[in-house]
Length: 287
Image (cartoon, rainbow, N blue to C red):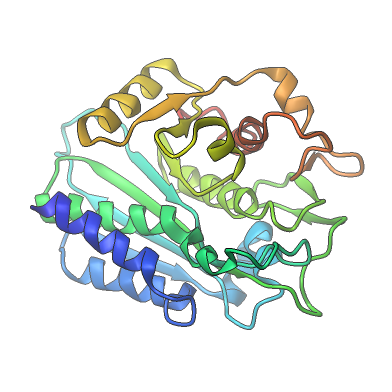
């Protein structure tokens, strides 16, 4: 019952229009979740705090919007002190509306871009369910919440930004924004103590070209962890298909005037290159 209700709450968040479900709305939902459990703590960073912390990806993606970004962190403490379990990390993409920014999307179907925060919704409500069930784990859940809009203040194609971990990125496509905020959120989660991480996102349209809607794409740097995630998906009917990582994919994401680019110049393996980009920000942690 708890799992089903959490899944339905996630769907409700996905379906809300973006003029209601903005970054501040997701932050308020996180506060509600934390208030319902003594085992949960919440911290929300706003615009000035995000800038002070150096979360360059969130700042770049949200630069064109009148709505402030939010970095939402929920910390659940459920493990026994004597338990030798790694701290889990959940990271969910929270783009509450994605126009594509200056690299604007076609108008057909753009109304569905209110759902670009689906990963963030899943992370928030999974955390709520974990707390409700009192599961014996420690968890750090991070949702970078932004709105990606075109305006006079928006990030331009060709701009160079600095991510939280110090790597520089050429933003050659402002519609490849999810990886920019997830990169910062992954770094943040790991700095907060996450030792086994799963990030969840509507990251690339390319994965639907590859797998359709029957399977979700799975990319991992650890075989045993990938097997556990795949097994969990099978249990609940969320089928996943593992895609490969290889150094050649990573080379496609090297920048010309910065460490990395957020969009490979060639249309090759779009989902895998996005994941290869994110791997640059997990610092060797199981992901």
